[in-house]
Each structure stands twice: as C-alpha cells, then as structure tokens.
Length: 253
Image 1 (tube, rainbow, N blue to C red):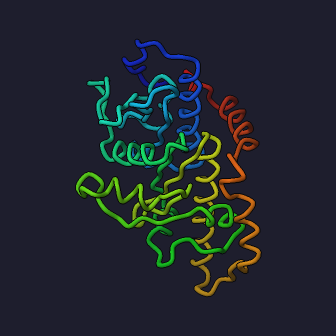
Image 2: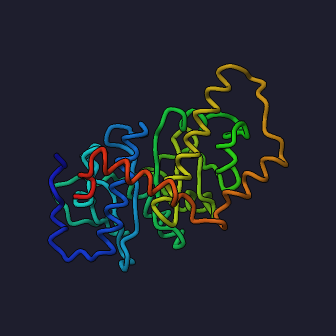
C-alpha cells in the first residue's frame, strides 16, 4: 500500500505532468531496488512541464518504497508548498531549487548518501580512472566542498557554480549528485557514478597501487558518454521500467 495522496492533486494535473510524476516515482523505487536509500533522507526532483515557478520533490516523511506519482509534493522555488500536513526537506529544497534554477537545460536532479559515494567523496583526488564505469562519468564530473546548506549563506550559489555544465558531482564528505535532461539520463549517470565508487572502494581495499586506465583509452570512454552525445540511458530505462512494473507497479498510482 502506498502513502496517502497529497492534497495538491485536487488541482488539475495534465498528462505531461503525470508522466513526469510517474518517471520521478520510478526513480525513487529504483533507489530502493539498488540499495541507494538513507531512511527518508536524500532526494530526487523534477521540473513540472509548463510551470516555471515550481518543481516536484518527495515528502520528507516518506520512505522511498512508499513514494508514488500521487505522493510527490509540488514545491515552489521560493520554498512554499500546499501540503501543511507533510514535511519538506529544507536541505533538499535548497539543493534542488539551486540546481534547477541554474541549469535550465536539465529536468531531473538526483542526490544520494551511499556508503561508497561518501567514501570516494572523502578521498584525496576523488574518483580515479580505475574502471570502464568511471569512464562514463569522469568527463562530466566535478567536485564541491562540504558546507551545511541550511547554514552557509553562499552554499546554493557555490553549489550551482561548482556544478557548472557538468552532469555528475562528488559532494565532498556528503555523497553524489547527478542531473539529466530525462529521467533515464539522470539515472544512468548516477548508476555509473555509484558503480565507479563501489569499484574504487573495492580496489583500494586490496591495493594502494592500482592499475589506472591509460589516458588515451580513458578519453575514448569519456567521448562515448559525454552529454553532447545524449540524452543517455533510454535503452536501459525501458528495461528498468519493465522490471518495476513486474515487481510493484504501485509507483504509478
């Protein structure tokens, strides 16, 4: 059983917004499937088609396996929302509103606190060219130093500036952030970034002198996955949606 629907659904919801809601809910369920959750913390957002003043975000009081299309909260870029009985993740709002407003070219933002992601974000030098997976993200990866976004007055501007035109970020001592023009793209960048971090942690647990992929070979990997050749992930996304529909289609409700 999914959580109670939000009151905001009493307003008219067009087909385009419902499609985005369904895709965003699918991203939350995929986080559950791949083990990327942190209780009710972390967050994924999406633009609302035709609405320049608000975006969609999860309610802070829901676990990710409870989230469906009808439980997502419409949040104004000014932080207002129409759900007085639900909790807004203030840090999540600050992160997502900053990124979505700074990057009109993207429609989805994904942020996680996984063990491997935090571990690599705290390593000197960050992500290293140790796997094919890392080649998918290193060409569009940036870093951002840790600050408490709810306390540091310049954090939203600094986060957006450090992201620049990249599609993936190591938030130092904090976790991972990816963006995408589509739900498929934000997922695929996050998947490869997370896998790269897991592989790096495994390798460095066995040796401090790993073999790195040579720069020429790494360039070929980066060229294949650079954003200009996207949006990426459509093939995998269709298969992932089929999996979710077999497993538990309630994300569509």
